[in-house]
Length: 300
Image 1: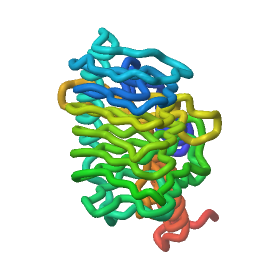
Image 2: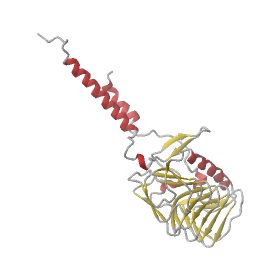
Image 3: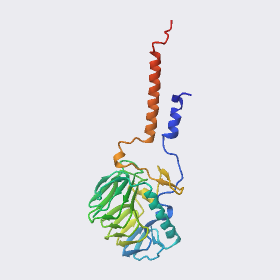
């Protein structure tokens, strides 16, 4: 069988899309059900509106004064306990993606999907941040915050040009202070998460691994509207890359490409087809040279 006869079947097998693999999501189901989760408690200045579970574990201290549009209060319940374990695993899994492309401390501007390292600064967001998915319905942004996450009172986050599989993850090594009126995505912080008040996080979560979450008349919801570009923050959906962690778990990550590589790095399928094209060109060239060889006998 010649190369030209098995090129198309091989393309179908390797280059025409990823296989369906069952894997753990970035946010496991119990964790994904929480809009707010704090290890040492949740404090609140009423009234805050919550679209999802709100709770704490192992500390069961949760202040009152909430309006639940979805979910319920989970004060050191089995669900909250499991969610806290899931949070530790999610932080570890995000860290496995590496530091990514280094950005400046202030993220104001437009950022394409990718994994990014963000250093500490007086503020990490002084104005409007636009997350542009460039038409990828499964676009993902992972911000590896080396220290704190701090947003100013004039900041905002919006998500455009993406779809149902999109996800935003703020992996914060220290505390998170959200002072702007709007924000987007999942904040996974090691320490305290607090707001300046009247914060609207219409698509995402506030999740503290070792400290508390402080709310002041905020609106926090995992009920992302269709087409908002944040539905994938509920866990994961189709079109996933799968990574095996050191402990042997298969974790599904939303596909991404760093901003600097979007126009420069071919997709694997493109590389495969390019290889077949070069092989075919080489074979044709050899055949042509053979027909023109001076040692070849001409028919009488």
